[in-house]
Image 1 (tube, one colour):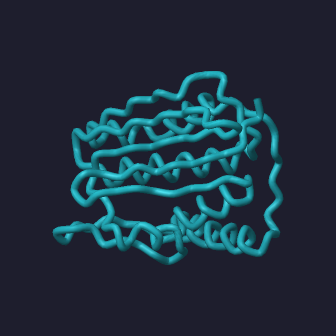
Image 2 (tube, rainbow, N blue to C red):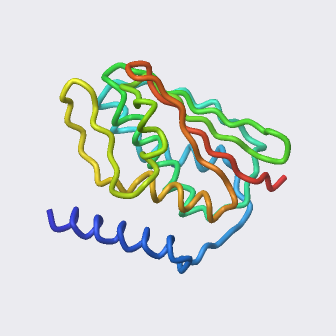
Image 3 (spheres, one colour):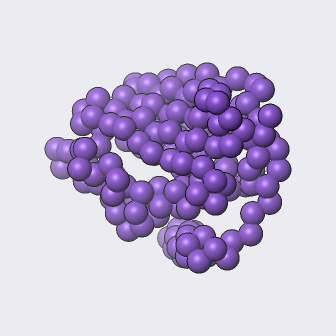
Length: 178
């Protein structure tokens, strides 16, 4: 419990620093496929516990200029949420594509989905969406707010689309470093 509380306090402090523009970033070119692979490696036990199939369709040659530590945080959060909100034996697909001078990452799940009126709210701190049918899923309400701050600091965009009961798709758009 102590470790969980320390992690929670550190997450809140990091988010406050990000919002105040006080967090230092170390931008460098990175291969998106390696960042996704590293994230998936750390999340594999969670997916395996729910027997979730993850299709990683992010291939090499997608170079982005990012703070690798913070970008791993973003990917782990979004993919981790996809795992958290996808039922047992579900599917998650991750894709990366070039769109002009941008690289777009797409994380799609077939989980519980998000109501249309809640889509924008999920990126605000302390906001959580109540799952349908009285399901209880733990969280702090910091994760997607932190993702949003990190992506904005990278000059990028993050957004989501969803349908209740059909799943969600999260998008990240970053400047290409190629």
